[in-house]
Length: 277
View 1 (tube, rainbow, N blue to C red):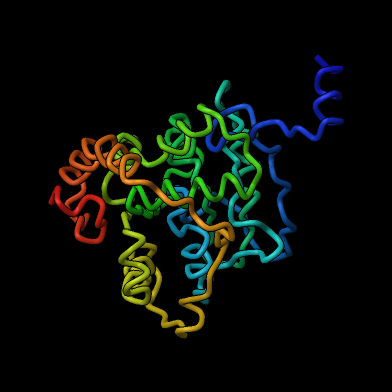
View 2 (view 1 turned 180 degrees about the vertical axis):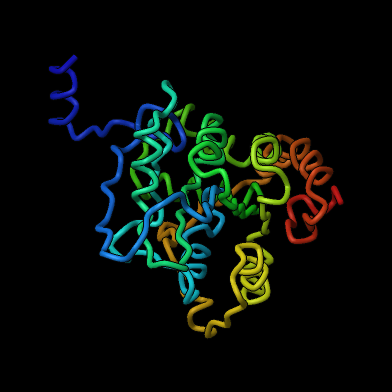
């Protein structure tokens, strides 16, 4: 096995990194320093997805609030719970997670990791580690999200095979993912936003987000609101009509179910599925 891996490295072949698939998770992040007088504890909010739906952009807008602390040396995307697909976290694991969020007294802190929405084991683990946490979800037209994730995969050098393609597709099946979140956290601790509406009216949707987090309203400049974050540099691949029709047919049943369980969803913002409204 080792000789095979060495051969692959010499040939320049990288091992596949499938988004949201257990076994490729990173090691636990190292907690940042906690200065005297600060406190650590469970995060106040966690953005859980969807992948390629503006989660990095939205996290930084939340972090721009004066009552939110985020260490600029720490990535917003912690991937902490990726590693627990085959064992349940211990009290020590939960304590380590808490130590990732040092903040001054009175400030809120959080993270965002889109894979948390896809990985079935995360919601219950996250709830046990942070029972008062508030969950933020951004949903994007599944086909537009699929195209962006495909471009992101090419950009990051994922091996493009059937498993990767299926993983990218499955990430856009929102209804079952949302059902898990509702079952664990309940409606009151779950904020569902549409990426397209956030792009159209960022300040209004950000004000909704601040209110959901128990923060006073705060107005950002237009430059702050529109600053791109983690943008995919590679252009999304075009879809021929047959593939688009196939994706529409494959996603439509899930979108119908999602529309029934998420009344605030405006399908007119998703041109690929507006006919379902």
